[in-house]
Image (cartoon, rainbow, N blue to C red):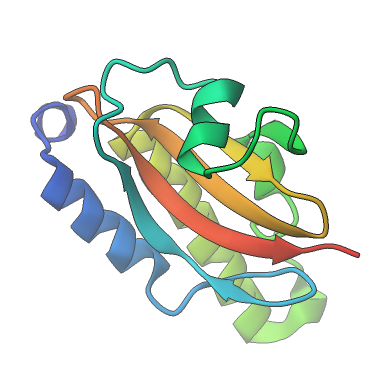
Length: 141
């Protein structure tokens, strides 16, 4: 199965991520969908603050935060019986999404850009070296 992921193309990665996020919402003060994201013409760019801010079309001094994927999903992926069956199923879906991101992309990180309304980019590298992943929004007041 590992060999399958090494030869996986961008279209397959997009299909897999869309399937994993179908109907799943990023929970914050507003719930937002996940969208597939591919950074065209950034293959040789280092995935760092400067690159992410350029991808987000924001100035260098704009608020920026880099997080580990597990830390970012920690609350959503934690199954709590008091949240009922729906909450347990949602936690399982976030666990599956986290696992899928690690399977499909190398060096996955979460980048949050903004102040109250934040653009969230969950990015890594495809086996071909492309920058890809997911984007969503969170609102934190």
